[in-house]
Length: 248
Ligand code: 6GU
Image (cartoon, rainbow, N blue to C red; front, side, top):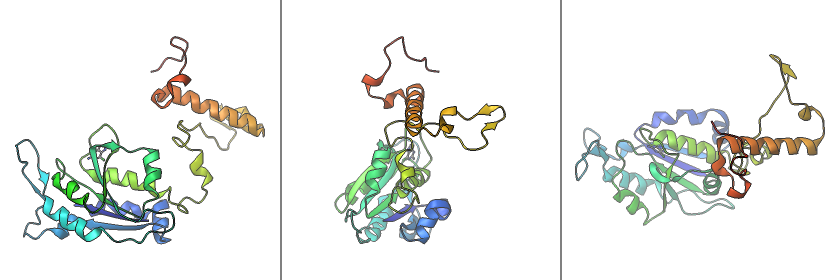
């Protein structure tokens, strides 16, 4: 998989050299290109923004540098087996569709994703329309809060997607049991010592009874999900009104 990032803050993405994704880059499982949008400006001040038509606070990113950047980056990256051949352009924006584990899984089978990281009040809307004539386009949000720009959001998405690319995570079984893969939050985990600050590891986990351990973990997952994320559960799995645990 190839990922290109266009941003006015390429230095944000230095962290992608470390840890799991850094290793995946060195092993060429992931190819990452970080590009400064200002490379595609032509004026002395390398201007990337201007005042909004219709008035209002803040600045809007100008379409011309974005158009040239996407012209330069679309249409590379050969697809490997099981990957989609054409490029996908992702615009991180709080006005986008929610980023979920299911979407991360879909994006992990792309051959080429271009992240277009906007700042200020966003990018001139014609940029996405124009890109859609040459690539698939997706506006994606991390959640219902506002960041200063798409960079941190793109980084979160790249980490969630990158770890699902085959070979990036050493033990693929560790991907199966984690939060959100089964539609539930993950159960709590413990390691040695058996007693720490007077707190004992639950006995069932030391029993060697694999069926009992699996049942206990499932129950813990359900309880945690009911308590902190009841919205994840189908309505039928909810406790009867008045019989359930109180929230908060
Ligand atoms: Cl994807 N971008 C920005 N700027 N803010 C956000 C976001 C994205 N997701 C949540 N807030």
